[in-house]
Image 1 (tube, helix red, strand yellow):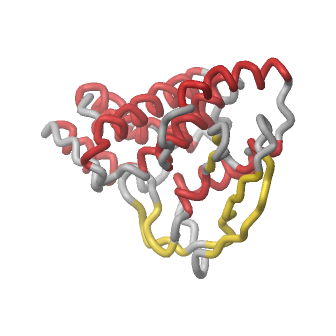
Image 2 (image 1 turned 90 degrees about the vertical axis):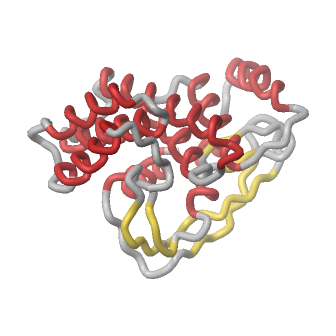
Amino acid sequence: MKKFFLLVMILLTEQNFANVHTCSDEVVECPIDGKKVTFCVTMSITTFGSFKDFQQKGAIGDHYEELINTCPKCHFSGYIDDFKVKLTEEEKTRIKEFLSKFNDLKIGEAEQCLIAGEIAEIQKKKKREIAFCYVVGSYLLRENKNKAEFRKELQVKAKNDLIVALENNEYEDKSVIANINYLIAEMDRRTGNFDEAILYYDLALNDPNKKDWIEPVAKEQKELAMKKDDNNKI
């Protein structure tokens, strides 16, 4: 999972230019039941800017849809590296118990991200890793009006885990902290928690280690929060 988390972090915090979107199929086995699962692993993408919550635009194809996948039999979900980890019997038991609630449900791509995040919670992974499972899920529901409440649920989960990640000092690079405070603010604004959003925009703006892009973007988004604008399309 580590290499894919690093890829996500690069995509979420920096401009990353490549030539085209390409991916290569890789088959792995579900660590719960041994069912074969095919990932289309991104090899290269071309980005042309990003949305205000860091989702990249451009020739990225189904990059975000392909980051997290699920076992068609038991619904174990995660990044490709999660499928390569040997689980203990105790972990298998706990995860199977959790997955049982999805036995009769149709699992969409955003639901896969929710399941992946909650499995990561069971495995006690870093909060920053768990948060971005939920962030990716929210990307997949950007303009889905029928699942607006589910999208907000994912964004609230992401925000809460990012806050704990900061409290746990999970970010060694101090210049990233302003990015994360800004993203927390965006999750708050998009879910209608405007007062808290303003507080986190200010934390990002007042961070002496912030990157140059923070100043204009955080000010612009803070204005939306002050107007109680929860626009999720931008």
